[in-house]
Structures are given as C-alpha cells and as structure tokens.
Amino acid sequence: PGEDLPLTDAWEIQERLLHVVDAVVDGGNCGLVPTSVIDLAGEVPVVLRQGRGVIHALV
Image (cartoon, rainbow, N blue to C red):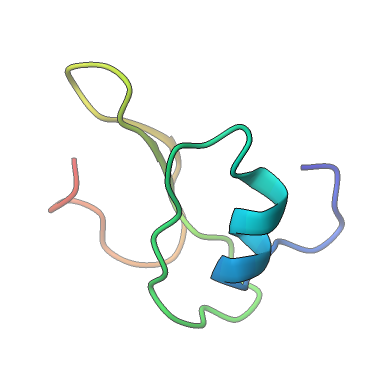
C-alpha cells in the first residue's frame, strides 16, 4: 500500500502486511505484475483485486 511498485516477494509481503492480513500464499515469482487479493473472511470469497494467474478455482 502506498508503494510505486507492487511487492513481489512473499517474505517481504508477509513481513510488511501480516498485521492486516491473515495469510500470504507464496505462488512463486510473478515479476512486477500485481497478484490477486481475495477476501476469505465471509462465507463467500470476494475478489478484491484480480491479478496475475487464474483464480476461478479459488473462489
């Protein structure tokens, strides 16, 4: 949040954002393409940001 470039390393994401998210899934290097963000807090998953990769199996 507030960065010019997306965070791309799972360890850095976890270190910087784990206080506001419950989990970080390491899907490998995705370059500078933003990843998907899915809210799993409710009964139905909600896609907050569609990023690189196929997410239909996750929601």
